Image (cartoon, rainbow, N blue to C red; front, side):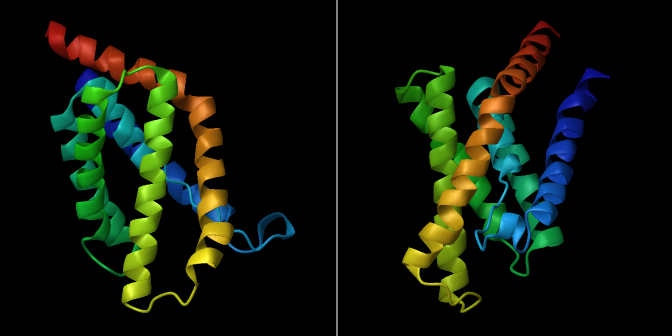
Length: 172
């Protein structure tokens, strides 16, 4: 039964991200700001930091593929970006301490990198006409704020879940 907890958690994050993306779509709160939840990336970051790099990269690949198939018109962007970010997170955490403050900082930085990659690819293929300064003010800052709030609320339970599953995995 315990082997289903991690895939079920990934599915919950995948669905929860979609629900919140629909909630924050359009003109929310009388503003034209774009809030993009990146809960899958947060889940993968915690899985990579407190679990293992291998598990984080595997989940990143499959969650990225699922994200590309379900939500985007371009296959491969998230399928390659999420595992690359999981790898970079694992390398960064070999140098940095794995305390909660550093984890939150590295995760928010990863969200920013993913947003820049997403913006640049959409800009290069002319899916967006948004200028860089407009992107930063309309999409990047609100996205970072939303994900920081999510991290503050859910980082302790997420850390505890991943560490418990890793501990249970080592015992078996």
